[in-house]
Length: 260
Image 1 (cartoon, rainbow, N blue to C red):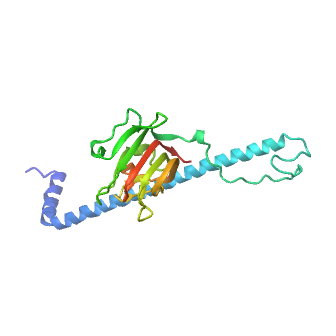
Image 2 (image 1 turned 180 degrees about the horizontal axis):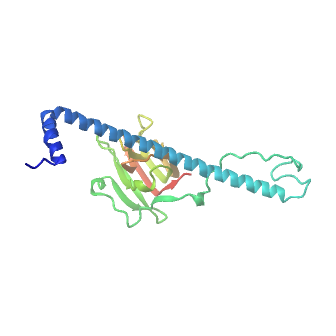
Image 3 (image 1 turned 60 degrees about the vertical axis):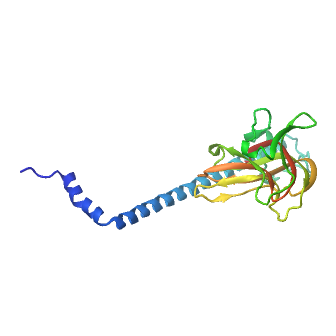
């Protein structure tokens, strides 16, 4: 008589155990799923920490470069001459003060998104009742939100979805030009003209970083805010419009840049 292969023998004796204890198997599956979620959370936390260290290293490199430039400029002067921007006399032991971390020059910031609302931009059908593209006095286009009478339910906002792979783990600065006309007085600080983000994290939590626009009427002015986009983010959308108020608001020259 032939013997039973080891694998078949294992299945023969273990499968009845699983079948006899379905509740135990469900509990084991839940435990494994929780372990996976914990590992994903730790990975995201470590990735964010690594990105923060990268930003700190870039800042340190800029500080070192600035210090070296100052030292080189001072070293090129004849002894007895005053250091640039000071009245101090040159000394062999003069110390060069450590400058604060300088911001990255504007032309070195990487633009990760830009929207000029030109002919290539299309307003979604769901937003057509309150949003449109209008040519301005100077011939440039702008996204116009017109909401003369609120219904107490609708917040007229246009959502622009971003590709998260280019901004995850980065500090990003969002800027847009805004003009408003007769926006009603907001009842709370987060209401009024809306320029912000809807950021859905890997755990499903939604954050709403935003600039403060408020109400009233004003001409074109730049509005901006800076926020950290975490690793593991599921989605990022820019919100432009009105919240909890009535009136008109226009947006143009929207852009997102890496802040560091």
